[in-house]
Structures are given as C-alpha cells and as structure tokens.
Image (cartoon, rainbow, N blue to C red; front, top):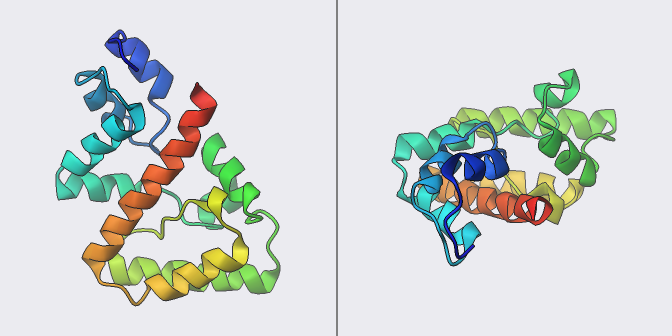
Length: 159
C-alpha cells in the first residue's frame, strides 16, 4: 500500500484481520500508508502495551474448544480450524485438545495460538505439549508471531 486510504474504508476493509480486535486496524488506519501492510499492522501490535497484546491473544478461541462446539467461531477461525482437521476429531483427539487447552490456559492465562493453516492435528498437539514447557514471556512472543502468520494468510484473501 503506497497511498493513504480513507481511514474508515481502511478499517472496513481490514478490520476483521485480527480476531475480535479491530483496535489494531483502527490504530493502523491513522499511521498509513505502509510500504508493507503486514509489517505495518504487526508494528502496531508490537508497539502496543503488554495489556493490549494480552487482550489480542485472549481474543482468540481455543483450538477445538467451546466456540467450535457451539458454533460461535468467526467465519475465518472456523475455516482455519477446519483446514487442519480440527472439525473432525476423534473422541480421543478431542479429549487431548481439551486437556492441553486447559493446561495451557492454566499455565499462561491465555489460549494456545498457532497458525493452524500451516499445520495439522498431530503437529498442533505436539506443539501444544512442547510449548507448555516454555516461559510465559516466550509464549507471549510466540503467540504474537503466530497471530502475525494468521494475519498474513488472511490478508491474502482480502486483496
């Protein structure tokens, strides 16, 4: 993006990129244009306060969690989880996701975030198990990095 877009048009076009967090795009709308839109959006996230970053992370649903079961995922999250097969879990896989989600949330205070479109069920479960051993600050950084990958892929569909 090399020209400044009307701020409201910018928000309307990109507001859904960050899960239940339109503040990121609203803030970016005041800072455009960006030589690289993705980098500009992620600069807003990285420049946010720790509380704002945690709010962004916490706005994401648990994988194969309650929102998936009761159908309240955003359309983007639903499609992303389905792409990794999370909508077709065996009872054993579902139970494992549920246990790891609970352990992860208990340890870190936010849901496990991974770009599921770049993964599959087995790799996601392995990552959940491995990342449970990380320090909280490392997991915050990893969650933000993964949100960046999610946004990168969502940007491809916006055009």
